[in-house]
Length: 390
Image (tube, rainbow, N blue to C red; front, side, top):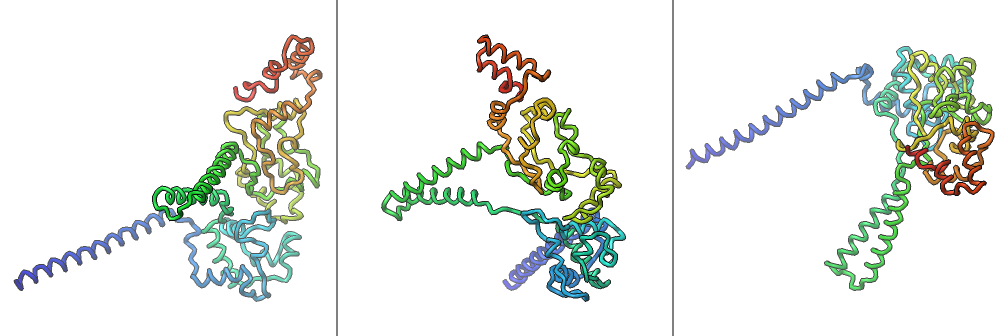
């Protein structure tokens, strides 16, 4: 019996030891795999190592929680660390970090010692950075570049209401049929009826808005203001969007178009030199600026800018809204089919003196002579389904 117990303990010990060894082997294998993958995907900047204390002190310096040698400066009050919901003309902490990472000879000390732009001179007056402070700022901005700019997320109010009512309806139905904690059925019926009505309204609204992005205003790679260019400086829309007169698309201006002015104008009144320098950097690298498209119709719809701009003489603001008042461009209209048809019905177009519309002049003549009814003429003219959905 003693020998059997000893053998049992030995087997138990051997099993436990084997399990522990297996865990160690598996952990070591996973760690080695992660190390190999990290080494394979390593970014040149990832070879820079800063201590945790450097990162902490750099963040405190940048956010004004610790004074510089030249005084207390709150960098984050201008160079924002999270995405704002309105346009901020100063470069963000992420912008500064990416610039620092991409330029080998970039130095904050030199920039502050010899500022080039008026904005930078005014905003950083009396500020200087020591070599140690530059090292700490570099540590913090390196971490900002690694983490990314972050995303501005809205509170999902509609989703909370929708799912909250759904949960209440489920509880009411469960109590009415099974648990019966509340004897009266009136509260249950009231909750279910109200919930169904609200859910139906959400379903109708969301189905109507399917594929529509009214109010869409994405952050662009360069902080370009239509208010300054089209509004204050009165630059014609078609100077930048020149292909809109003969193309399906309104077009995005090339770097060279921007440089027609910004070879001379090197500093913005609001943004300083930082944003305009992005145009020159793109030109020198030969890479186009990756602007984000704001207005886009569904793929099953056909739209011709040239037909509307050059032939019908429709103003850009009719579809794009008062862009000359916008810093950040946004989709003003919902671009729905009903909105397009309303414009086709209400907008007066000169059919008679326009060679493009000779067919429509003939339609009007047939209508006046009573040879063609209005419905048929509308189908053949601006309300013909095949003109947009061919």
